[in-house]
Image (cartoon, rainbow, N blue to C red; front, side, top):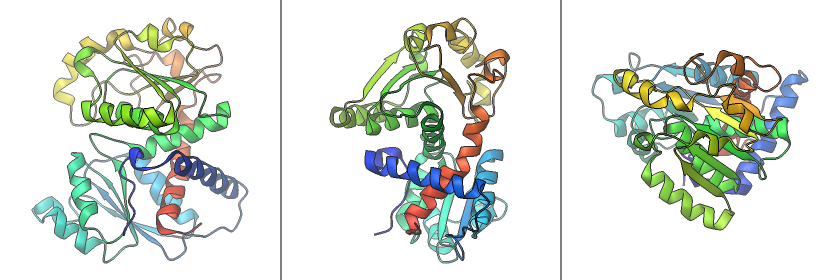
Length: 309
């Protein structure tokens, strides 16, 4: 049976911990300039229905660093953008490559693709979930704080794919997560229900609130994302009116642990979801470490899925 990585809820705590360990090992070898090519001969197919700077660079350069190769496919390059079915596209592309990553819109699209693919599929972002980003975030937290189990994470803003992914991460690993959103922008209900069931086993504490100060109180990690995600530009004015109280600013960070770290998956809109002074604070902000760590977390995921470790 082909193994995929579509959601963090499909992983166990042990699998996530082991992925982070492997990520650290890969990072160290690359930083040391070692001749390390466990992906030699492996070809990654990269399907982008949504563009991204970090996603393309992190996957493509990562594959090349470990001896593999990657093929970039935009909607202009494949028949999927001109009417070929998802099922047939999956059957065809998986005959040419060893593993596939997809960045797309509806989560159902990647689920259908994975169902018909004969090689592993990685979710590089859907409207519902962004597991690769949260794995990189957990790696960054482990590096900066030394622990991912005893942390308190506060997420502010829209209950989007990042919020949903953090909810699953907390539920599986077992840490405390506070998600502060306007009532009308709460995270996905199905995700919440699934996570609460997982939390019963892991001991995770997941708090949903509309009070950003409550979420920030004593938090080790302050996390935010853009208020209107790609494809939601028509909702920008409405969302911005709702989100202004959730900006991560000098006042809000006073409630956090004094050694807090600030995280953002990027791209960021300074002056909107976060004050420039906060994201550019070298003592607390780790946003560019997160961006770099996408490479290592994704390489670990690839190596795990194809058994090259």
